Each structure stands twice: as structure tokens, then as C-alpha cells.
Image (tube, rainbow, N blue to C red; front, side, top):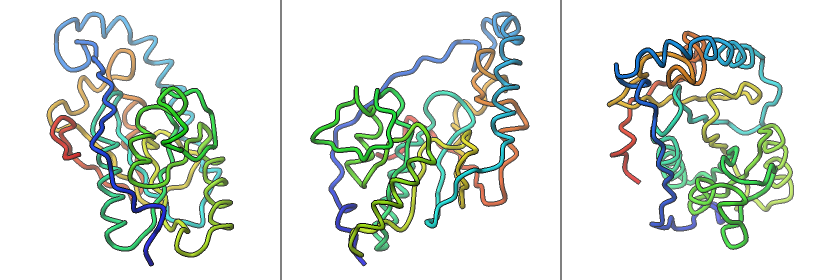
Length: 227
């Protein structure tokens, strides 16, 4: 059945936010700076590992596809999520995006309205996602699941979502995922394999590498991924 709310044409407008990684993350320059930051990285990593070890507290009646990465910065998560959505829509599914809304002021849960919301409200990437499919912003992802379930309960069959695409959710343990794509930049890899701020990892190894059986590691090149 065709999804009426998800078949909006994607605009060509892009919302790119350039991020400059510290030189010690992906090279040998300033290696001493990275070494000096290891005590802070150890604290950050311990907190991240503790958070990721928690069992999921929220589940959805819909399948949840998670797109994430191991490192800070861009690895093409949003273009990859858009690609998944386009494939699902082409097969007759009605996906909905669930995202944190990084850079926006609204905590949510809120359904993104491209005519009413700005990047200051919900962030750049949710506006880009919302050009292709319904998008829910929620700092607490479990509240986003609740909003999606509530909207489905009151929607007619043609507008009812049947799959959730969770953008940038690899380090979020609160939501149970059915399939996870972990993206790795083909050019830079995992850098020096140290945790922020000593390196680019968002959680210490091997914690981010202890993925469920449903996870797939995908090598991408963020700069050349088709948009």
C-alpha cells in the first residue's frame, strides 16, 4: 500500500555543516596532544561504555533500523538513511525517521514541519530527512517511539508507518533495534582508535564493536556518498 505522507520529492537543498577533526585524530601530528588527553578520554569512555551496557528500555511494534557510526563527525549517516528510506518507499513501505535533532532547540518529541520549523528549531539534518519522509525529533528516543505509535493509532491505513529508521542511534542503548548499520569512513577508518577527545571514537573499543548479530558494518566514503 502506498504511503501518502512519505512520497514527498526530496529537494536538492543540502544542509552541510563542516566539521574539522583535530589533527591528532587521524594522523601522527600532535601525537603528544592525544597522549596528554588520555585521562580525559578514559573518563569519557568509561561513561560511554557504562551507558551502552544498559539493556534497551523501549521497544516498538514496528521494525527499527538504526544507522550510526563509531566516530565523531560525518561518515554519511544521513545520506545512507535517506537511501534506505528511498528503497523502502520504492517497495511500498512507509518509513518514518527518528532522530535526536542535533543542533536544534526543541527537545521533542515533535513531528518536523518543513514549513514551520527552522534549523534552529530541529537542526539541519531533520529538515533534510523530512523532505523524503515523516521525521520525528526526540532527544529521548523512547518518547519519539511513543509519538510514532500514537500517530499510527489515529492514522488511516495509507498513512500508517510500518518501519522506523533511527538516524545516529548506535550509541543509544535505550531503544531496541532490529537491524543496525554501523558506517566506517573508507578513507579515515577509526583514526588512532582512541576515545574523544584523544581520538575520534565515541565509545571505547571494544565496546562500540560489540554489536548485536543483527548489525552490519558498512564501509563508506562520506565525501562521495550519493545524495
